[in-house]
Image 1 (spheres, rainbow, N blue to C red):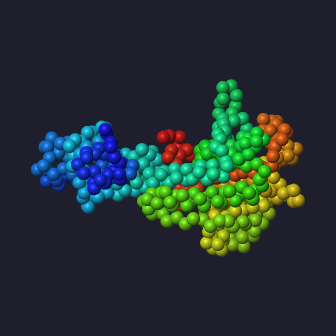
Image 2: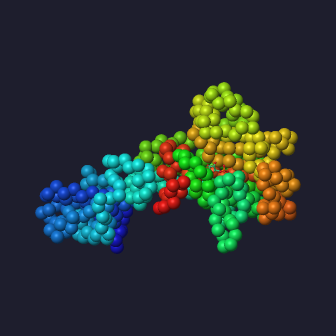
Length: 439
Ligand code: AMO
């Protein structure tokens, strides 16, 4: 066997004379003359391999001394307790097998002594991932998505997938990536929006999707990607308030689960998480405008969208008042919400659309949707779009579409705000942005 145990699994007191094999990357070779230490690193931690000159076959010792950092090896030997070694044991090797030798110098430092630029790290993500802090982020991302699946499954949602090659825009026509689909024009999908709504007409009742969304946004910011991961839900016989409740409870559950199942990764990152308190505060759009106008130099008019600095001002205001980072903005003007957001029946200038915010940025948008086809066509037209292009979607509204609501939350922003990373690219293995198309 190349590997019988992960580094963190080895317990000398349980093993006795049993031989083990550890496999991984050569983290460090420390040759002190009479004794040589080789530290092997795997996903779970480190093992120290100890070779005492007087007791070791010279040929094996020579091989150990010549190991190049970050090469891949498998080491077989017996285990002894050693308080000073990582994980409390050392391996006395019978055999060291070099499986793949690393070239040197490495494209970047892995020891953490020199902090590399994000761009350098992303160019050599495979090396960057050998740093504990980078791995910890993706371990936590896994826990976040596992929690999402558990939570939504438990609430009766079933996981679906929608096409990523599509014929129409959903979130505004300017930010689409056109592609060639045989001899036709097509686009990379901005959101599962239209498809998750069609599923409501199909009676699927409660669905969720975790998948890529594509936005051809030109701006190069710390919180925008051109390919992001969206967590979407859609639920029938629900209004916006029902799905807001699902959302806030899900976010709280995710935090709980990360604390419970990934505390070691949080520790590596030096992050202390606090579970957000539910219910999240509801701020109306009108109140949001007032907060901005009273607390900043900006003067917003009713009907304006909220920009980054406005979002920050509102976030700080809410945080001061509640001590919480998460909140909702509700009751938006219908005109600045997408065409599918339902206007209030008694006051149609306001819509049943909402945003879920973190102190620092928007995390999610959602709405109760329009389920009446005539109204939907009117809204599509009033946004300057051609209903003909939406025929495949509109059709689903004419033969029995229940009232429904849903939301989408960006997975990267969720992880980013949870961990307080400065740049969204930190939480994406292979980010896609204006400049970056590889790796
Ligand atoms: P929206 O366009 O607000 O809503 O997107 C939902 C959430 O997805 C994330 N997100 C992004 N993250 C990083 N980079 C981007 N370029 C990016 N674009 C979006 C954000 C955002 O809040 N169809 C609706 C959802 C719905 O109503 O169900 C939608 O797509 O966290």
